[in-house]
Length: 350
Image (cartoon, rainbow, N blue to C red):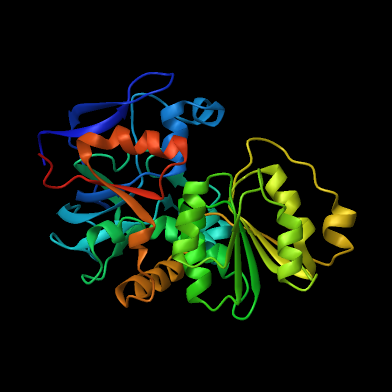
């Protein structure tokens, strides 16, 4: 397809990005071209917008942002046989090689030569995006396009929650950002008995309460340790889901985790952190999971079923549904912590 399209482009180093006219991507034989219906803003997009240390070392400008999306195929490459024009799709953003040791042993989410959509190649904050057929996911037509655009981060949350069963467990979620809120919804749906949430944003704590948290706490004001220990008969929690990347939250979670409990780590610290392995991990016999990406594609299957069946309704998580041209409102809401999930309506823009 020839022509130009509108995209959110990081043109230069430094904070910011711009809405620009760029060429519609040309696809290779194993790729498809998708007309984007909805895209959602991720913390990675915020880092690129802010031009933090990670972005400075990874992103090459000019660069089109965005990796979470839903849309419809408008063109297929000659070798793309499993999908057709008109298919309603989203995409796994970890573009795996399919040949390395990790890919060959069922862990393509940590492929040794992985490329990431919207990071290592042009992204989905655009009217069209090109993606390899092997990472496409065909969406259930019952799922609204805005919901379909958040399946990728919902997969992060799902794998964090379900590293082990949470049914009947006491669960602490540290960090009520968009993925933390999705973890609250999933923990509730999967049978957590008590669900505690901590965050420094009262706005996000209110969202967590409305989504199903039993008790919400602001560590800047509340005595988190006392409240949770009183609520759990002094035992602490069975499960900690660390979503914030805060070293303070990590240590608080480890302190509140009952001996022989489980912690899953998804939040990314800004740098190295120190852990007392003897007292925080080994002598407590805790199990610690590092979570990145999603299982391809078993996690997608579960997320799709949770959404299409109505088992999880993310309406309260999606606090901002914006026109494409209002994208910067969503970016600033993310930076200020005054939002849940932000989605952008791209198809049919004015």
